[in-house]
Length: 415
Image (cartoon, rainbow, N blue to C red):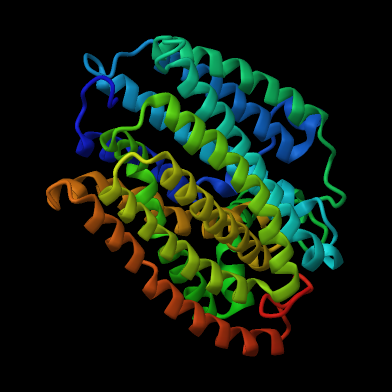
């Protein structure tokens, strides 16, 4: 969009299609419970939905490759919205699949590592394929048209489908897939709808309590808002600062993605040693502080050494915070309604990151293009979340004293 001359505000607002990640809790119960014909019998509940969503993404990505953002911005936006909705649906099954791979007594030890590998896997697609490879193909050296780049990406998604098909089934069967009630009788339509659409949400607040449940959701909403504001505008900032597309691909995507994968494993080690709450507190402070390096870049200009240093520290803090957040959510997601409750918590977290962050371009424009002031603003945005985290940490003492997380662990304590 930037190469076609669209404004910062337009780029920021069209990114609002990713609000689907903040709304997937609405249809997550259906992804949790509805069995896809043929695919379910072949791949099971979780993998069948993942493969189905990947197939839809291939079709929508090809459709987007046929549109021109200048002459047909609507089709580009509609295709991007479709991809976001399907991808958000895929996330419901991926998150539930990851949690269900482990027994209850393995949660403390293995969930931080699983969260780290989830972050590493996401970065592998985002940074190496969707980032480095895509920018390299569409950059100054290769110079492919963006429609051809999008079509090339469909090949990689098709390869990912093979990986999902070859992946193992969860060790435990999910109670959420049952068609029978607690008395062993087959559910009627009314009971099935109640179990599917309402019970997953009410069970969360019944298990956690209203005060702690709301505290968890408010914290997740506000924790990564500043980072999202920065992330939405980062590529625009790099270009305006004077870096080439290929420099961005090398430094931001390839180097940054590699560092995120390495630091995700470091974050898992810290979480298993010191506990998720302490890890999130440290990670939140470090994540906000790293934004000040972007402010320094805006004053110094396109210096590769400062770019690399900024990415090194920023990717470390982001990976650390991401692993903490995924582990935090995993502790509070029911194993019976895993996909729905995970989607509910990640949706709350993503609402600030995807919906409110759509105004990031308008904020930069409102500041007269003052990037330094913008990055300072993203730094202070984490303060309310850290205060809420301290309050949640106090509530967790009573919560664990009253029966724990139900997952076999205490997020305040090391594994």
